[in-house]
Length: 243
Length: 307
Image (tube, rainbow over all chains, first blue to last red; front, side, top):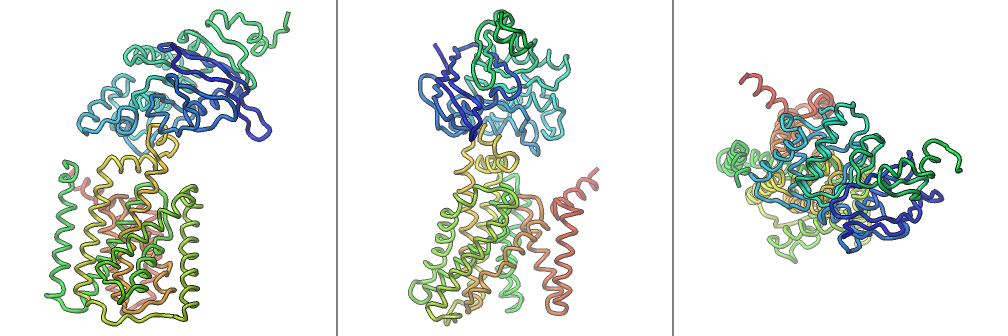
């Protein structure tokens, strides 16, 4: 069954068309990679799904019901979590407090304070930040803050996780660790994931299916191996002539 | 509840202050009763300000508007509505006013919000000034207002209520939401915090007690003059006390208010100009050298001596 359906999504900023007629579906348990050059509309698509921006055309359906027009906090409580390309931790709060906030307000809505702390530590353990739980988020390394983005998203008890370049700017070793983390949390939480990534190798390795956006339009969709052979994708990425 | 009891030093401090305040009229006479009233007033105002501005990071430079509205409600209904109704009503009207202006005002952040709150306060001041002029009243005298001791006791209740409210906000889920909004509003809504609703509720809650304080202080001066009651110096003083106290939670206002009321007692009568100069120096000094205020300084001192 499709967990998420984007139906003809269009978005214009004044005269600029950021997205036009983008339709796709994401099945439960899938990992879908979202590829495309800078400015292709990937992050705008995430913002529309998460409720930060409103689509000019089309609708988003989650578990069969339309979520277009809902606020980000409402979308979050329905079970969609997102991370930010440019990380947005609660910089003055400790790593644990960051995750606790998500636990208190997200889909989990936990209330017993002792449980919340324990649960936050479990999540930090899963993303490999448990030894830094006291550290203010603002004092962490980029790799740490990217992990914290994931931890905080997990804290909201999502079914669908939207990951926006959680591996950009990391060293190859850190990328490998992050891939391992993502695989294990996906299994542990039974998650469906849509992931934007410029580290193409990581994307190919992780995804079940890849969607390619170019100038706001969906130009290709398929298994990672097929995408690499796709003519229109090659044309966009390598400038090859259509045969 | 556990978080509340963990704050026992703060609660103890508050109880001692309240006890001293209640004893003042009996032990130290009329002059010190007024000083205590003054202190309780500033604690109530600064705590209320902290509840919103300290927690959310939206710095209000117009809190005098709630004080003024409360005063105006009490003065306008004086001798027609009993005080035990009109003073709380001043708080209710101030909170309602906050609710109404919150939606447009809370759309802007940072320096724009600061200027806007200041502007709204000035706007209301001149609207009420015009109403009063239209009614042919340049100022009003209140005969038969309650005495300073009664006002002091009510004011102490307000100071405790405001302190309790801010303490509760800090340790509650609500406060966790406000703190997240201060840190990053977009991230806050992404983890499920209804940011617009939280900001509006906090803004209204932070207006209610200043409204009642304004009503009491109108009774204290037995004289109502719009430009004086809506004087922006009140807003500035609240912010100054909050900065000098520091902390962004319920402890700061106690220190900030006590420090400044003490300073004004020392200097006001003998060297009023020196007082204003020192006020400016302290404000600059704290912002530059001790941005976490007296609470921050004391906490650092405590760590150094225990280490």
